[in-house]
Image (cartoon, rainbow, N blue to C red; front, side):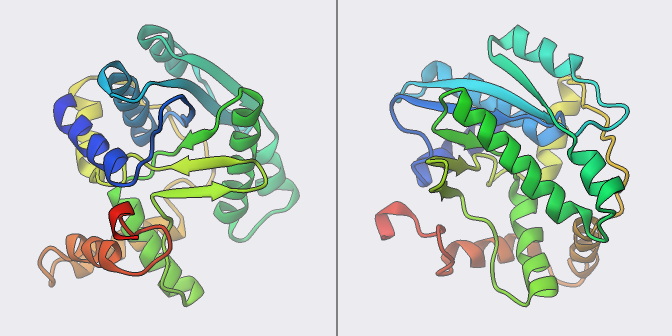
Amino acid sequence: MKLQRLLSYVRRAVDDYNMIEEGDKIAVGVSGGKDSLCLLIALKTLQRFYPKKFELEAITVSLGLEGSEFDGIRKLCESIGVNYTVVDTDIGQIVFYEREEKNPCSLCSKMRKGALNDAAEKLGCNKVALGHNKDDVIETFFMSLFYEGRINTFSPVSYLDRKKIYSIRPLMYVPEREALSYIKKNNIEILKNPCPVNGNTKRQETKEFIAEISKNYHNLPEKVFGAIKRSSLKGWELPEEK
């Protein structure tokens, strides 16, 4: 995938759901994975020509796990001119060794989001950009159905009243395979994931399930995504339809 195509996805999401307003200061959550790196590069590029002026900050929440190394992200941020902050935490220790959670992903996600929002607030940001892609939207829909018995997925824009901060998801139209393609074609270094359960999660199981049933149902993920967009799920109504 070329940068122009990545930008077209991001620009459409930003415009469809009014994700960016004049004067916004946006904290980009950067884990070092393919999606967060695509998001950072896309927003920095968009910043140069988007009619509404906005500022960017890049934030990495370190889980404190052995093997965490962020020099690659720091160099990228320096090269594109984005301020970079690493938030040191002991989330990994708490989730995997003290609490010994059977389902660590849920608690870890909540704690990481909390640390990210706290850091964004301290930096004076009013929005946090998260790197959820199109596949994530669909997988979360199935996970909510299978594990919670609910018809639900995260919304393009959400508001945390306690922090007065919006979360935005500009990659919501970007298929995962295209994000990976962009990273590979541009030789961008992906941070090795130090998570002890990486690749052995409910999300990975759901991803594999979708891939399997899609063999028998043509274009299933696209149809599910379309159904989500046309649904009455909170936050998914296009602004002009409200």
